[in-house]
Every structure is written in C-alpha cells, then in structure tokens.
Length: 511
Image (cartoon, rainbow, N blue to C red; front, side, top):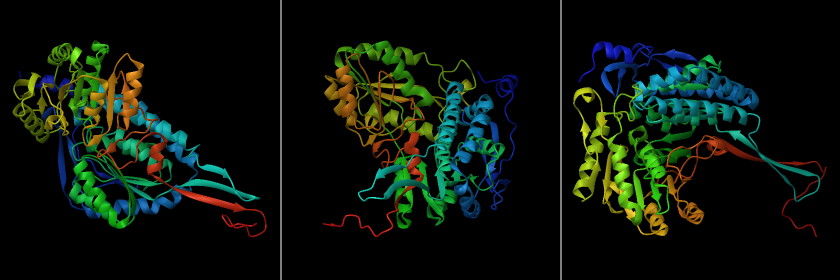
C-alpha cells in the first residue's frame, strides 16, 4: 500500500526542506560558474527531493585548489596541537548534531538509522583521534654512528590533498581522510559522491562552525569527469585519496603517474566468513546477517561469501535462510525496518544481473532473489536480501563484487580448504572465522591474506584507531585510519645535527 501524505510528513518531520546547496570554497558558500545544478533524491522515496547541488566544472575545482594552496602555508605553520583543537571542536559539533545528521544521511543514502548513527559516530571518533595526534605526530630519534651528532626524522605535510569519496559511508570516509590530512598540516579539496553530497556539506558546516581558517577545507560537488578528472591532473594537488571501485582506482593511478602524485586507493572487496564445524552457529548466523545485509550489502567489507564446514553446512543454511526471510525491508527512517534500499536504480539492475548470473551458473536461491517494486517499494530502489547455496568457488557470484544484498554459501572439508577458498579471489580486504578452536583461529589469522581479519565476528566493524585497507586489488598498500592514515598525508624528513665542531663523514673509514 502506498504511503499517504500524512505518513510522509511524519516520516520526514524535522528534516531539512529542499533547497539549493552551494560549494564551499575559501570559507564561503558559492555557486558553480557553470550556473547548473543537479537534484538529489531519497533512494527509498523518489518523491522526496533532498535538495539541488552545484553541477561544478573545472573552473570551480581550480578555484578551490587555489584557495587550498594559498591557505596551506599558514595552516602548516599552525602548531599541530592548535590544529588538533579545531578538529576537536568539529567532533563536538558532530556529537551535538549526531541525530540530525544521521536522519539526513538515512534520507540521502538509505541505510537504516542505527547504521547512519554509526557513520556519524565514526566521524566523531576520527575527529577526536586525530585531534589527539596533534600532540603526537611521532617521528623517530636514533643514535648517530658518530660522536657529538644528533639524528631524528620528522613528518612534513604534502600540500593540497584531493579527496574523492564514495556514497556508502558519506560522512565517515570523508572524515577519515580529511581529519588525517588536516592534522598533518595539509589543506583539503574534496569531491563527494554525486549520490550523497549533502553528507559532506554537513561536514563542511561543522568545520565552518568550528572556525577552521578559510581555504583549509573546500567542497566541490559534481561529476567525476567534470570535477574528478581535473583534480587528478591539477599540478598543485600533491596527494589523491580515493575510495571506490577497483576499475576507477586503476584509472586514477594511471592519471596521477605522470606527475608522480602520491596516491592512496581503497577499492573493492569480496570478503568471506568461514564457519567451522565447532562454531557457535547461532552467533555465526547473527554475524552473517549483519555482514551480508548491513547497508544492503553496499559495503566494501560486506560478507558476500560464506564458506561452511560440510558437517554443519545444511543446518547453517537453514538457520540463515529462515532469519533472512524475516528481515524487514523499507525506508531506513522507519524504526521497524532492518534493511534499507539500494542507492540507485542502476545498482538494483546490477544486483538483478548477478542474481540471474548465479541462477544460470547453477547455484540455488534459498532466500530472496527478487527486486521489490510494488506497494511501499514502488518509489524506491529495493531488493530482497538474497542467499545462494550450492555455490562453487569459481562461480562469478563468488568471485566478483556485487555491492548489493547478495551472499553466496560454499562448502569446505577443513579450515585449510576454507582458507584456500577465502584467498582465491583478486581482492584482499576483510575476512573472518567462526570457531571455538584457538588453533584454527590463529591458523586463519596467519594465512588469510587480507588487510582486516576477525575472529567470531563478521567482516564489518572496523574501528578508527586501527589501519583500514586491504591487499591485492583492494588497494595500493596504503591504509586509512589510525596512525597509518597519517602516513598517507605526510612525508618523512631525516635530520642530522652535528655539534662536534669538525667535519665528520658517515660511512667513511677513519682508521
């Protein structure tokens, strides 16, 4: 049954009225020189216009970079503890407005309120973490091989950081990148995903309220071709940090190579949960539900593969399918909903394509399997949470990233076979094992070639003070979050101070 006007009003009560949002450049909200805007609509309800945003072009990008470039020298010379105070104030603003921001993000991106609250909390946590790094930013001191000589290494900021962020964590990931960049003394130009620009606008509003100096943080909305490509080529941008697909990440790496820009890529995943014969099956089912269908499977860490020991396989499949069929799909603002929409109509088509591929490959749908298009789903982008059983490790649904609410269950005969299946994809982001056997846990911990590993937990749930990222085609070796995020946005400088009063030559024999 379609929602009445009263129901809609109640659902969107307290949310922002639709309006035109501007770019944030040099401390001011400005319109694009293109004179064009684009609409942003709720993926759960196409009748809900969130707002219009600037359809920016290269001129707007250049203006933002110029502002960031001019702000760089004063900002890098601002003592790091003072820079940290700005970030702390941003964290306080986000904490105060957490519920308001979460509701707007659910409306914009679709995931349920419990998840968007977590998204905002990650931004808060990162603000506080990086604020503290302002009093650390540890370098290295070492003894010299020569007398009366002092050696140390310190960090230097890179310059202007160009950030290209995705739609699935529309405030957490921008915060992960920007907080680390700023505490190191860099200035920022960010291009948010065109599907979720409001979330980054809200982050910019928090920076503005915190009193961040003009030009230090800049937001330019628009398309990848119009804004992203000029960002990659701009000579004043020293580092690009990108989160998105492996295909786009490869293009970014190639585009940045001629200027030798620093590049940080966080890309795809095909993550696995391994369920051993001694596992707590109910706990494993809980983890599989959350890992596979949290954010409607639209996470780079989503548990899109599950390998189960043959002794408990049938029981696990039965339990997981039964629980999955009970999941309530709908508008994420509804507190009774378990899973929200996919982000767009094109994403639904991708999910439907892979469901057909799975069926054609001979796998069996044991739950879900269809898009939801009638009644309350008619004006949104919804798909049933879907489970395939009878999946072989070389099937496309077990090899390729789907980025939707689809998971594939396979069988194994041992932990060693489970690990081999887990490692048998081109990605290496996250993996997990459910077992009561500490030996199996440590074996998998050692042998899974992923950047993140969990024991008795799903493949999602990273915390901001540990490195986040993956191996193989998931990334290019760099990490976000924790002190590893600082490495992305800083250069090392080794310093030698000779106070001997005479010429001393390192590595030269003096005997």
